[in-house]
Length: 609
Image 1: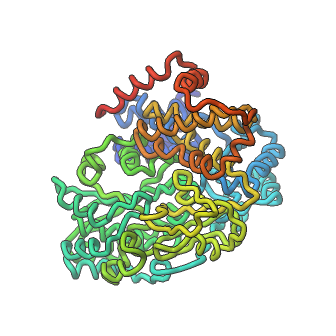
Image 2 (image 1 turned 30 degrees about the horizontal axis):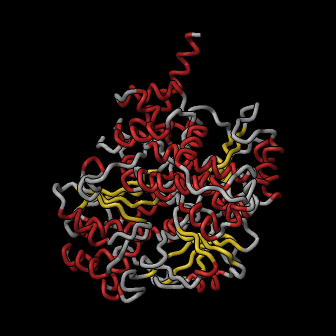
């Protein structure tokens, strides 16, 4: 027995030592260490958690807490093949659940469990960023798109034969860009370093002034003015500033950043360097979502080339400033798309959003002034550097300058990436992508806006219909209740659990939607849903909670018959009744007094940590 334990410790040590050494035994690198240990060993065993905690001089509970937070980290064996079917609303339209059931039946495994021989496990995951070529799945982190019954059968045979992924047909793993309409950004051809040299010729202050002239706003959804953010970071106390590119593209229906990182990586990295020059930063991070693990090596190759060409590292472009970029891979947590949660993850912690102020531009990564920008935002700064701020602002509208990339999926003939000047009408977009029978469009992903057919003359712009890029089309055959229900399940799964309003509220909302789906709903349930929406909006800690009920409320207002036909009775019910809602909350949560419980939680969790 002792010999067996000694052998196991020796094997674990041989795996851990090079990983720990590569990451300098730095606790800030905890997430990357855990990810690499899992890639080598298949999962993170209790012994590995203990050894990592000891090596990093961290409490074991903290290491296990971080490992348990991210959905792509596994504390128990998940099989030689871990298959995860994308379960976004558009994958549902394309029959992903039927394909998953077929695979489970052929491999004799229950969903969410490991097969008896330990060979394979099959489950669902949130949107994988492949909405333009679904249904899709991840097998051991690698995407397979355009699934059919034939392809599923072939995959089952490969798994039964225990074929390594390296021996699977390469066409399985092909991911297309699907560039359908190009404009300023997608038509640009960048000579690496050209934009950077143009900015350096203006000087740091002159370059920042040019960005402010462009009125470029963040393309990640919030729409904050880029020049204002950069200036705030530049003027913040301290000199050790940081640039972070937020490539955690987790919003269902969004895949534009995937395409930019695949085919326009130089634009993105040059944009990060332009931001560093403007604010005086020396260190940069690209936070890459776990679903895009397959892009890690190609992106590392681009970084290596840029270092060799003098565009990264010491004395960039011989202009007297140093800047380099490191890629940090996420592990499956939608909430890390929020900038402060992303920074927590960069620091090797659970991705819990911070209380603000202070804002990241003042106190971000390791307490240093930090700029966090979206992939598309940074790529657009290249255009500003090359063409000038005034030329950039001539496109679009007064409040929404430049162009916007839209990730179009769902019921249309030509899903893919479309670039338009801001101000384009939704009707025009639908015509271009071949959506001839649209009854609704979900703009901005699950947390965005559901636009009904009578609103299709509205325009894509911050002053009308803002969006991070998702544009999901649903034709007249689709049940908008089921679409909203899918989004609600997504939010309930992705809640980080930090604050009670979101943790309990999203679960209550999911239970109400499931109750209606089962045909057991009553009219007062619709009133209770509206009450939960108010609670989430007024008391949630971050944007995930405040937007979790958006798809339900939008479809309830615009497509109410989809809900009412699921009610047991359409007879008159009294207006919202707080006592009845609290009774329902007690049934759902098992708590005697949810109102008192929530009140006490709010008071404690609103205080700074």
